[in-house]
Length: 151
Image (cartoon, rainbow, N blue to C red; front, side):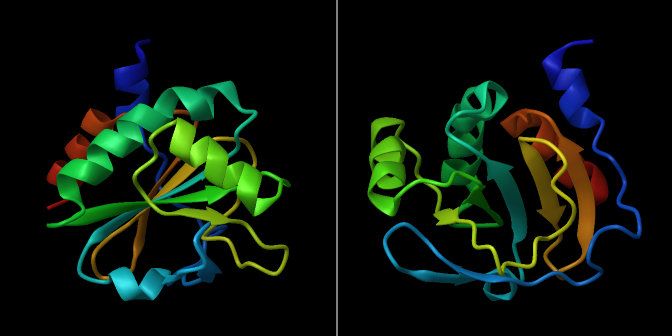
């Protein structure tokens, strides 16, 4: 099965995920991001790490999606599961041209839902509802297809 087809098979959410998720995290530049501040847009919440090969493979796809949608209807928030200094994470982000906000995870953070493997991506609808979860890599086309089929 191709990667594109796998991306289209988003898992429907179960009771494991928060019904109306929200979190507040600082990005690598110290700017606060609250999930609820993005109401009105689709939000792709991507849990990833710098040491995770599938995570690294999907970064260009997430950058492409974010850059094409950020000013209109959707954003990507990358939640780093790395246990590294913010300076090291910032260096990685710059070297890999990551254009979306990268938020170091916090031990006290309420996650959007379970993160049993990396990468894990959640899709939050403009009204704040969780509508999908994908464990494994995603593509920009797969996310767009899911969003278009959900309208």
